[in-house]
Amino acid sequence: MRDTGSAAGSGSKPGAAAQSGFKMASLVASGMLLSRIAGLVRESVFAHFFGNSDAADAFKAAFRIPNILQNLFGEGVLSASFIPVYSRLLGAGDEEHANALAWTLGAILSLTISLLVLLGVAAAPYLIDAIAPGFHGAKRELTVLLVRILFPGAGLLVMSAWCLGVLNSHHRFFASYTAPVAWNLAIIAFLLYYGPHRGQNRLALLTAWGSVVGSALQVGVQVPQAMRLAGRLRVDFRRTVDALRAVLNNFLPIVTGRGVVQISAYIDNLLASLLPTGAVAALNYAQILYLLPVSLFGMSVAAAELPGMSRASGTPEEVARILRGRLNVGLRQIAFFVIPSAAAFVFLGDVIAGAIFQSGHFTRADAIYVWGILAGSAVGLLAVTMGRLYSSAFYALWDTRTPLKFAVLRVLLTLALGYYCALYLPATLGIDRRWGVAGLTASAGLAGWVEFSLLRYSLNHRIGKSGLQRKLLVELWAMALAASVAGFALKLGLHGHGPKLVALAVIPLFGAVYFGLAWMFGIEELNLLMARILPRLAVRRQSD
Image (tube, rainbow, N blue to C red; front, side, top):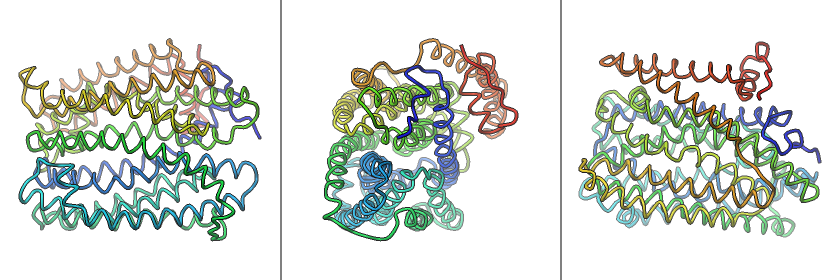
């Protein structure tokens, strides 16, 4: 077994392993970037036709319910439970056994999801009563219809996650993470074709059908490559029983942990449904923006590192050294991009929201509302993204129960804090009730820091010290704040101009200041980024 992490050692300066890890993470991030850009275009078009209306609330609430399937059985869960077992078989050279495992698991997953889709369609009215009790009359009926349309599409997206698990285990990252572009394009096409000629309720139903079509396309673009890599179709329960048991042992704690996190997300949706009209839609708009850095800079690094960490072998000390090296390199990559993202959300959230959403029924007041929610999300952005990498390290060690325990604690904290912040804190502060939704995101961020601290402490106790150097953190925050001040000043100077024009001026200035300071400080991650984008012009500088 090649020691893919030794170059990094236990320190935090990137070396050969950093270049390899950055390359894989870049492939994941590039795929995610394309899909997220398509997602932002989708949400921009959606906001144009729906704004923060009742139909928008209904669609966003309905969309969350079938997503139970995707979140419980989809990408994150299946990757964390399937990839470590599948990758280890591939690393050991037992490709025939690995492929039999992939096909057998796919058969089990197909049957399970089909049954759950049927159950979800039948139980849609009861799910609405549990998730959005604040919806009544026509708004509730529309939400029920939307849930019934969307459930089959969510089932297809779970099968897309099986393809992703096969592709990622073979280090084929780009195709699996660009596949959601097809889903987004289908929804955009339905919105643009039907939007100008349909009322909002009718358009919501047509958009839901567009989502189902897009789900089928997302699976379709991955299936050919996944089938080639998985080899001859062979379902063999007897030969794969031990491997299936290992996947199941990993799967149950992960799906339980994801389940309690989903409960938290649905409680947020429930509490938002009790606030004035627009709270549910605005929360979802903010989450689209919040998930952009989480996906590009948190999930991408965690997804790229999971197969490599899972293949680590040798003595416990050797495995610990490999994990420390890969973990420290990944943490630096995450922090370099996430810290400025958090600062931008706090200082420039209205610019970002206005650039993406402000059009048609989505007004400047709506952009400021989303900004407040987004600023609350920034509280825990760094903790949540780094926590994903620590969880991947536990999954690589086949320990899924430790992250589960901390996820449960995080959810309990989120529920307690979120309930108070959403329903009671606005009255205490003497502000409009609708701002309670910003309290939901801020309270989730505080709980995220508790979870991250526990993950780091527990893993460090097991593999040795890991984490970011204090000097690096100070530099990154100083750079991000300087960029934010420059961007904020320009934003004030351009007051009264259109949101797109302001964004075209402010966001490039923010980036120029941040990356310029990174060059001055000699931040190695900038050199790695330049080596990927402009390999001939990249200048290698050793950071202090």
